Length: 391
Image (cartoon, rainbow, N blue to C red; front, top):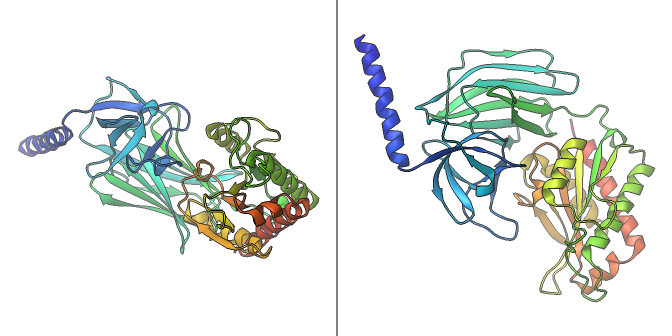
């Protein structure tokens, strides 16, 4: 009886301390299409630095209000920011002193491997791609371990091993070791009818050939979003990206690729959320997004490839190497790029800034149909070399 009383007092004290440190707060859930959390309140032309997209109906604790964002408490030491449109307040949600994890199950079906984690509540999370060795780390904020077993079935063929670490009192990290070096993507969501967190891991395609891949091609901009403009020709980026995307589609089909998805095939306005949703439905093995760069300084030139997640960098490196073989100068291989279509973790993706429309020499190249064909051929070769370098 005495032990029970002491434990109850400790829990109550911890809970009151947490409430005191929060001062005024409101509980809510994530809502809307593709809600996300950001590291801080900063902003630029690409938006704030995103931490992750997150599922709907995830419980969040709002502790402050800015102009367009709410500050949310993820755990005792971790905070993030969310667009106000992504939060729906719910007075029926009570802040608990702790949330516990339960048992895991790891298995595979005919297409994917899965890690399923039973939780007390739908809590915020983020994932990190790790390399050398290839792993996925998933942090669940607000969770404390009560996991006493992890059942791993042989039907999981891409996942080598799963274990966890309690990195902080209320931050629970799940480590998923992968069989292959290349990250092929993963998807995190909650079961709609429960508080079970699901991490779906994509397997490496077999056979590992270009013609076997499901390829998505994104022609940047379109419709009301015209993009950059040629310095002499006044040609609009949205029209040129479509020409290059169609050429890439044709080149890939000639090489035997059958499953190709184009985010747009004409001059139409398609927002980034709509593009992402369509891509997630298509479930590509790889996405190539085509753009043209621009600068206020007309001497700036070169080709560049962009990625956000370290596990997808090899794809962008392979394509950049081939683009440089066209005699273009190197603008660079740019990581942690906060472009919307670089955000999904579900499939390898590369943004290719072919050349600068603001540079007279490169603009002339861009307008040449022969150069268009060469770019498509180099991207195709980059994809082939990327696949050849895998184990």
